[in-house]
Amino acid sequence: MIKRRTVQFQPNSRNLFFHILTACNLKCAHCYINREQHGTRTLDESTIKKWLKLFSISAGSKTIKSVEDTNVVFLGGEPTLNPALPEAIKEARRLGYGSVTVDTNGYLFHDILDKVTPDEVDYFSFSLDGSSPSVNDPIRGKGSFDTCTAGIKKAVEKGFSVSAIFTASSRNISNLPKMPSLLKGLGVSRFFIQVIGIRGNPAKREGSSLQLTKDVWESVVPETARKAAALGLICHYPKVFLKQDEPFECAGIVAENYFLFPNGRVYTCPLCEDYPLHAFEIVDDRLVKRPPLTETELFSLSIPEGCVMNKLFHPANIKYDKDGVPSYKIACCMLKEEVCLS
Ligand code: SF4
Ligand code: SF4
Image (cartoon, rainbow, N blue to C red; front, side):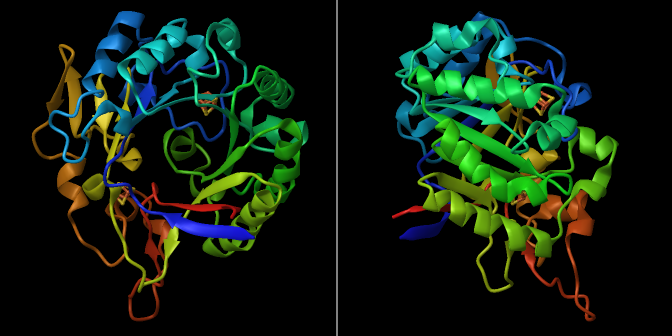
């Protein structure tokens, strides 16, 4: 039987999305990295260790009792380009983080799979935006499909747990239904479908032409997730749209997510990352709360459209009826549906 549930924000967990550099060998069309805002620094081993320590303690946290309640995801840029990644992973383990994930484009630089073990990494998450080179490569770069799928196979052979991330846009949504069988064949166990966010490159270039309408999203994504679950994959996708009578919550208020960049900026909402609205920053290896006005003050604005940042930065996502009432609410981008076999 297929089980479908909304994964509510966990009151006793914290997620650290740790960008250990912004450099990357690819130039994906939908890349959200913004070097003007996040710098070009590659963090060294000593700095990564100090910053991991900052988020491994419960002091100052509303909800965290111990380090096991914190999950860390290493990302970039391409995190395997940073030679300090193996030590970063081992340090996160030593400190007792609840889980350690590496998001990669699949190029697996510096022989990362030979330098860490499946006991140290809970998941390698590979980004793949199509079921064939003809769909994936125009978005992610020539040769990236073959390299990424070869990387997935190698990781699976070495005993690592592997997930895949598909960023859905108008360029590849029609190909999404072909992904579950490809991923099953490659040995992937979790499948994350993301919706394109208009940040970074898309904000500068193609803009909203890449975005998906509510009708397209709802006609393709839930059914693909069901197919993936029927094959035994655990599938997650963002809820995106809420009916007016469904409850809305902002993760910036009810959850603890930190998006940490190499220039020391720490955001608590990913939609703010193109702006200097970060709630915290790391100064002299200390986590410091910034004075207003930051994202924090904006979270508490209660509006009928749901997510306040979406209304500020992407108002075209919202449709209104003839009386000016929003036809639906935009959910927090961190709210996910999970579909799997029960
Ligand atoms: S692999 Fe990731 S960091 Fe690199 S260009 Fe693509 S989206 Fe950006
Ligand atoms: S995406 Fe919207 S709802 Fe979620 S944390 Fe940001 S402002 Fe809050």
